[in-house]
Image 1 (cartoon, one colour):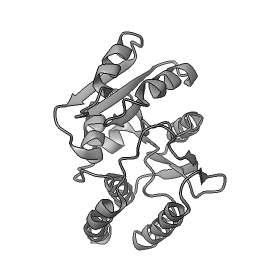
Image 2 (cartoon, helix red, strand yellow):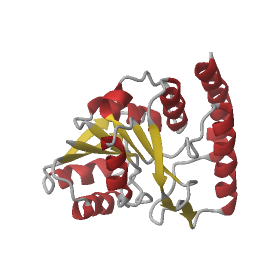
Image 3 (cartoon, helix red, strand yellow):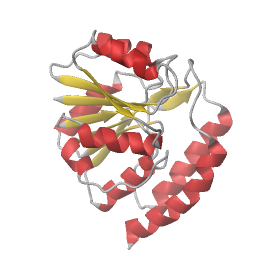
Image 4 (cartoon, one colour):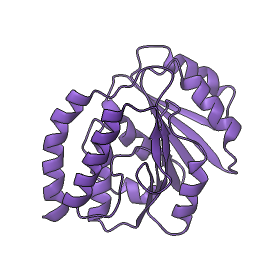
Length: 231
């Protein structure tokens, strides 16, 4: 079985379209779609409950209170039933045609496959130029300080051998959990590969990414992960 996992927080404007798109376009024999509703205060959970009557492969776990992206991802990892776990955003910015490519990489023996914006064939569409430059610079710095040839340590679109990712002890609550997973998988000498990703900036709803808030917390995370990686 494959688990396709989406964390969702206040996504009432897009969640139904996202779920319908997954079920209409994904061609897999045995799979589940697992959504972690992270304490949404809008109609996200109500919409998801209605969709479970339409799709028997849809499973929902709801947090009573918001635990942040990291908290939602940890819940999703813990509760995945598939031997392969796909993590993706609920805002329809991740193209579904990357899923078969990532599954194939895991079936070839890799522990983790990152859909990267920075390998040949990858990129970003309609994303503000300053965010593109900042992300490119950050990932180049991360690759250097953590000693890896991987190009996109912060991408949230990934595939894992579920057993491999469930063995990690994860601590981050926010967006930094993607970097934490990358560094800890590198530390374990996991087999990691990348496939191209064309990321499309979200057209519906609003992003939960707050640059200033994330940057303040990232500084401490970067230092902590540096010691984890090398010492």
